[in-house]
Length: 200
Image (cartoon, rainbow, N blue to C red; front, side):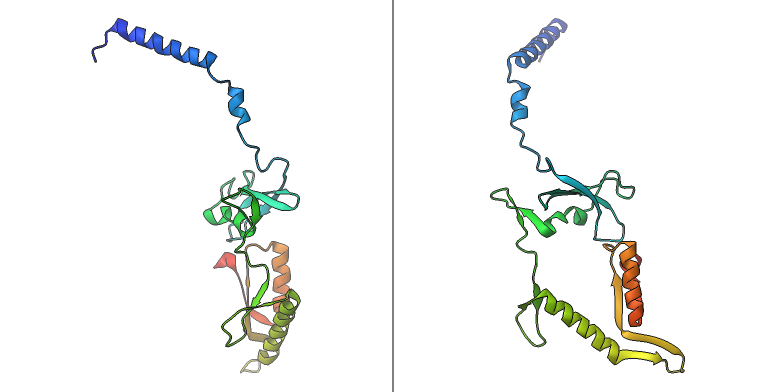
């Protein structure tokens, strides 16, 4: 294309004029704003929380409407992650709720287990049990294991008051006070294998 200096100015002027006319006579910006759907966090109560996946302790902001979690995102004011979340932290929302791909409605995650499933030794199928049964069964098994394996002295006759058959592993979802109580409980049982996820 052979374009002279005069032709260049004419083309530039025509382009500018066409743009100005489109701005004046084109669709109003208000129409575009009307088409924007309402944010799902509109009117939500925001609460700060901590991610439960690893020992980093990233901050999150939870948005709740009528007792239902509708959004989860990184806390920009948190000194550790400054609003960023890893893929596991971002996916925490889907532990409890998911958005139905067909209707777009918020529904309970159909894959989330909400009932106690127990498979007896030798059985091939799981059966549903109540939470009361599960808690009582766990307490019974902990006590039975402790009673069977409790040592008051070691092979040299030194007082040890311990059980080597139970271990305790803390998690990053526990705060400092909860970890303190769990450790006190484990030590009261005589557990010596006490570890925390943050150190592993």
